[in-house]
Image (cartoon, rainbow, N blue to C red; front, side):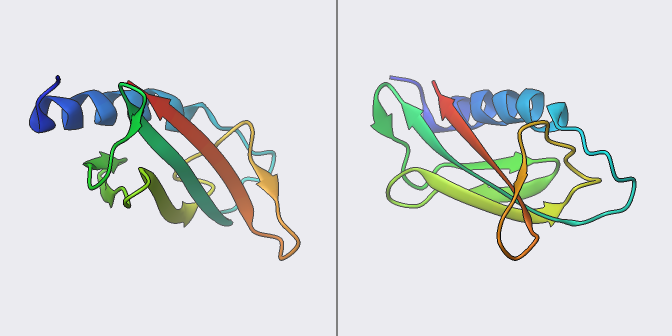
Length: 95
């Protein structure tokens, strides 16, 4: 079992490597909702806290998290626009 503090360091490192891999054609900032789920040893990591680009994030009871930011802060390659024109990207983290 990985301790909670060590788990937070691992999660932060994993997210830091994934989040910057996004790229948008437009140079202007647009709203981006980055969401995902954190699973550790096959189970959702409820209440895990970590930071994405210095912004603190906490998972819910099912290991899910959401960060509202902009496209310049996190240029994501697999983002897509929803019906309201908001960019969305989903990240799955398994440790």
